Image (cartoon, rainbow, N blue to C red; front, side):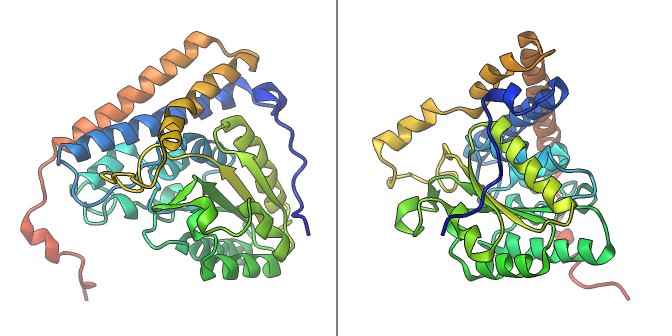
Length: 336
């Protein structure tokens, strides 16, 4: 049984119906994500960021393309590799950096760190360190939207490593039964922690799993931000009309290891070389030539400003005072 797919054909940005304004937004978001992850890597290696961080370098097109289809009142649920998702949905990079630096001005007052960034006002229901839980949280949010009669949707991000978890199948089954307004977005980045895709996923494409639940599934090039945007836009529009859930699988590739400091001994020479070959931002630059009204020099300016915004956020966060030890006992109990 084959999974039903959307009717998506994306011969470059022009074929995807990308306007100059959308292209600028997509490119800006990708550049901000790239620089955020680069700075996080640099600062972590300097010993300035406590705890673990999991970066999404190479996956920028997924977060940027998917979240660009959403409105302010829509929600996302994220993963342990969630910086890009949060930025793309509108989280403040300065508060995110403060959280990574363990400063009180961070989203979780510096206590949650990289894997627990949330901004409900922006529709970010939280990054999540428990594999697959983004889908359970996502259907809860989608059910609340349905019960309230709101015309909003949820995107639940997860990796192929979570695709075999019980919560994934329960969530997809429940979403199908209740026709919830949710898009399950799988970032198939070739490795689940240290395990190659083929060693733990029984089918060549995670999107095939949608057929078992009776809703559309499609695999898209996760390096192509315009293809991601066009595909997810169809799924989002369908969900807003009451059409129910969909599964979008974006084939992508994470450049770094599972976590910063991961020696990546499980990767072959070809895998390491791939990180130097596939660059979604370079591809977006090439495709932008097809976008009417968008000039090449604009992209240089967009990238420069994006880098400046993230660098300023990091400098601000690094210069903050560390919270006092007494802050550890705050917010433990509710005040009477």
